[in-house]
Length: 133
Image (cartoon, rainbow, N blue to C red; front, side):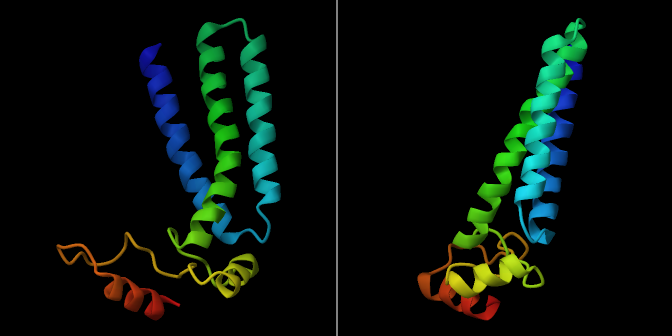
C-alpha cells in the first residue's frame, strides 16, 4: 500500500507541475483550468470518502488533494511570472499585459542559462534582465 501511495503521489505531483506550467503559459485566462482542477479535486476527494476500499480511497484522496493544490498553483505561477521568477510567454495576451505592466516580469528562464560559477552582482542581474525584456 505504501508503494502505491508513494508512486501515486510522485506521478500526480509531477504531472500537476507540468500541467500547471504548460497551461498557465498558454491560457488567456487561468480561471477555467483552475476551476477544472479544483472541481476534479473535490470530486476525487468525495469519491475517496465514499469508497469502501482503503487502497482506492487512498489513491483517490491523494489525487484529489493534489488536484486542488494544482488549482491554487495557477495563481501562484502567475505571481511568479509577475515577480520575474518564471518566464513570461509574450505570445499569450495575458502575459503580454503582465510584461507591459510589471517591470519585474521577464522572458528569461533563469534555470536555462550557462552558470558562471559565482553569484551574480546586481549590475549583472540588471543587464540580464534588460536583455531579456
